[in-house]
Image (tube, rainbow, N blue to C red; front, side, top):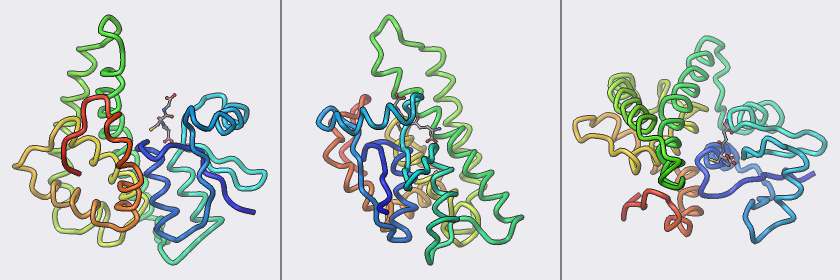
Length: 219
Ligand SMILES: N[C@@H](CCC(=O)N[C@@H](CS)C(=O)NCC(=O)O)C(=O)O
């Protein structure tokens, strides 16, 4: 049975999970969540009232949360690229870095973006200032942490890199990574050159005019 993937190409968390599908060439049907496809929205809302996407449907199984989708694919649809290391100690480090990218890069960048969509009277300037500070702290920490290896944890591409790619892609648009963090900037460029993420970025390109903070004229 064909896997179904509910989401939107411009969504950072969808891109994170799509990278895993593309890394291993796993076929799936993209169920676009947009006003042009109300039937997908209705089916999605019936299955997942929380309403956060992506969601993967595999027969009777529904998998929510991008990290869990990647873990599920590794177990149920394994391919040549193993995104969760077989070594359990290394796997702990990969999962830790996945959490760090989600919580301390993706979340603060999302805070800035969501705030920009709100009407001026509902904005939260103090919260946005905290989020920008968090991004700066994360950039400085990551720049040191990433030195000496190609990917987030060692020299193999993993779950942590799936999380890092859209996080750093959009975070740099939202709060530019300072020039001094050369290791981090080189890592972001390496992620953009990875074919699985390059494909997700390409598929999302038509939606750039909708980026609430104004998308820069670059990747
Ligand atoms: N913790 C979730 C977060 C998913 C999430 O926040 N998705 C955003 C799109 S990037 C979303 O569903 N936004 C719509 C909404 O909040 O209603 C995950 O890891 O998948």
